[in-house]
Amino acid sequence: VTDIYDPKKRSYVMSRVSGKDTKLEVLVRRALFKAGLRYRKHIKTLPGRPDIVFHKYKTAVFVHGCFWHGHQECKAARLPKSNITYWEQKIRDNIERDKRKTMALTQLGWKVIVIWQCEINTIEKRERRLLFIIKQIRNNR
Ligand SMILES: [Zn+2]
Image (cartoon, rainbow, N blue to C red):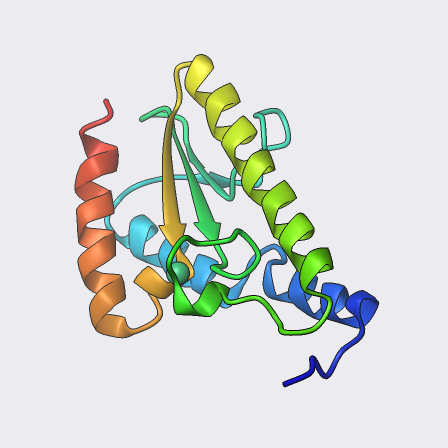
């Protein structure tokens, strides 16, 4: 199977997937808001510009697309068959960057929660995962 896109186009397509305010991110925010948790989004003053930030609980949340962020052992993170070296490098860089972000935030005393796209891509999974996360955030006080 060859990739239907050349690297440049694929990069564009994937950047759209991982772009700000993805559908899943919006659903996550909505659920957390409903649970009474007040957040801000894409805070530029924090390392890595977390997707959702809870100042009161000093907690930063990232909603990660499985492909783009190289989710381990995840079907959705399988690389395209063509330009494999390109993709391996690209995803490896992203994983490294994510690690650095998490470390920088942790060093500033922040808790970091990562939500993977595959954990919340059905209503059932999403409700279960978010219930857990809501408790986790509240415990961070
Ligand atoms: Zn995944």
